[in-house]
Image (cartoon, rainbow, N blue to C red; front, side, top):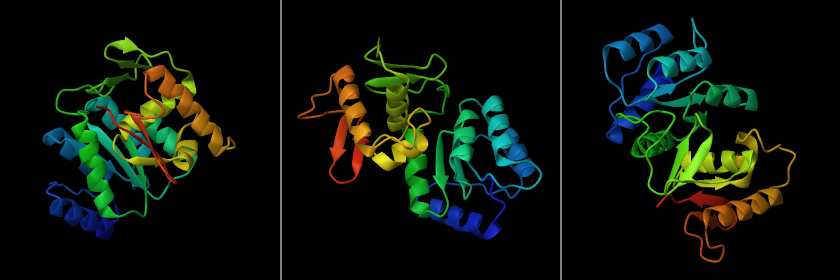
Length: 222
């Protein structure tokens, strides 16, 4: 973890250790980069507002140097530009502060369970029914490439990366660049209908994209 707020960093570190996730806390980017060079880690939790080097630049450096390392940005800088730049530089997830430390543990487990580390490349994650190839900008199901529009690809990709978590329509509008925020929440339902049709999901008894009444959707990659 690279977090210059020592008190917050220790709080997160203690919370993760209670969840049986061992964490090394560093307070400057250079300390963090040295630690990454000297030891093997499964994931990096990265703040953005750091001394010496901005967190977005650290994200780029780490992704280029350690392509299979999972990266979660943990930052109070949570406007769309920072989110867009974070994902563009290789982040796997973005967690806006403040948040319950347990959520960080949940998200770390979810990313590591999907196999973004331990030999799997960042660009092509292991999966069960669906696979993302970020270099080719494609998603396959059972080795068959899905014919998706850009918005459909971005939605499925985002939901796969947050598999098992309930995602609200508002979250999709805020985090997916190909969907303008001005779009209506109803338009998300229309796009979901098209995605279900293309992936062969029964709209009456969906297996993959499950509606959570009054909240949004959950992707089940099984």
